[in-house]
Amino acid sequence: MYNEKNEKILLTAQDIFEKDFKIDARGYRPQEVDKFLDMIIADYTEFSAIIKRQEKEIQSLTSDNVKLKQEYSKLRSRLDAASDEGSSTSKNSVNNVDLLRRISQLEKVVFGRNE
Image 1 (tube, rainbow, N blue to C red):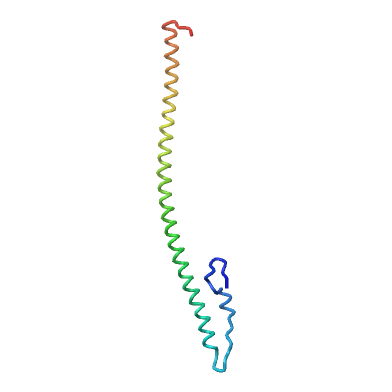
Image 2: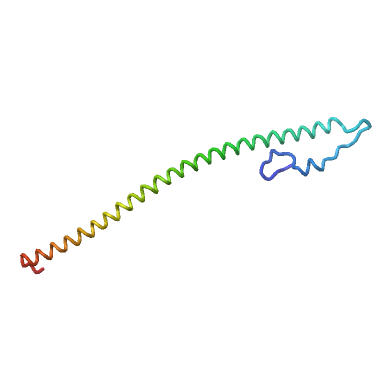
């Protein structure tokens, strides 16, 4: 049998449900029942392994997610702080440019420079 998610799984729930054993004079053939039960056991073992792998992956991804959220918060704070500094710096630069223009105009008036 083939399962879309994992080729190692031999049975589906429908296969188990629809399984009919042939009846001997003394009941079901023990070898046939044992073989079928072995397949079920193999499936359950594989399911258990899949679940364990996925739980580890979930744990790892959750841990990564927490770390990335923390890093995002730190970077966001730094960006906000830099943005705040940048806006005050740009205000200072505008103020400095205005001051330089005013000084230049005053120099022109005081020293009579007409450029």
